[in-house]
Image (cartoon, rainbow, N blue to C red; front, side, top):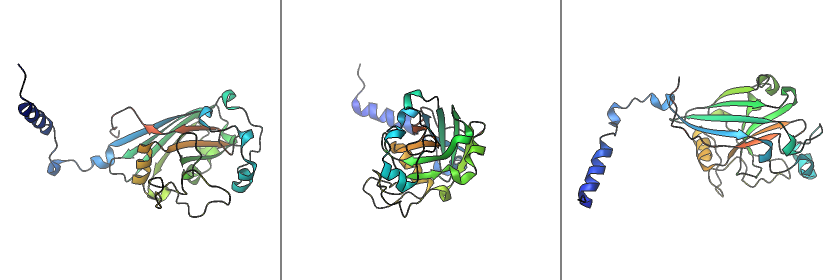
Length: 224
């Protein structure tokens, strides 16, 4: 026997409300101790071009000319994994990275950029601000806590550099504003327009390897 539609809807609504949490009894500390997780597997194949094909004018304009012989993307042994955990109250984010196949002394820069797959975009987090990268990554790992002050706000791009996305990673394409908060960074992560990029002496312009950042296929994690 079929259940009447109205009765079915009533049952569904009551079933859902039975699991709802009373806002007055919610543990407010969970905003800082539970997380939304995004991750990325980095590889040379995600770079949009070979280092030998980098535009000479842009190399000179932005000072990203390689100083060591480059290796074609399909022959590089570099690989990596990065995870970003955003606190649910969006006050902080935690970045954990693991890399292999790269000599620490060859690492020049490591960033989170804003750009869709295959597109070069501006820097939004510069891990170089957290100390000497070669020292930080000498064991192949990096762990960093981010707050609003770590978000790069670009006011003046180098002459000749015109990324597909406007300077400073806009919250929406075509919008005049720039991301300045962890909340804005998480919004961009949800849109799939953030990527890790590791630059080395041999692959300075495009980068050694790149990893587009997407939502992890896991439930929000509880802090241990």
